[in-house]
Image 1 (cartoon, rainbow, N blue to C red):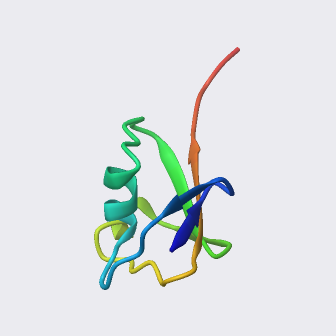
Image 2: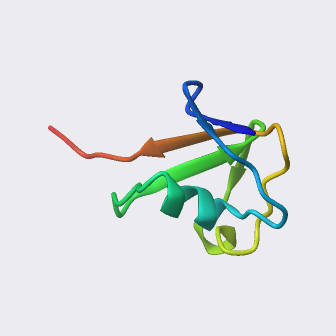
Length: 66
């Protein structure tokens, strides 16, 4: 089981990636920052970065304003 944004539990599976988490949680915002266990994962690594069982995943939508 992994914890997403300190509130949502997502079943873990072998070889789960950051991209899998984004897809399963249905995050669609085009600009996001993701950290796994406190380490920021570059967007270019979302497809390859493995998420371990028990991970704390944070997904933050970036917005601009004025």
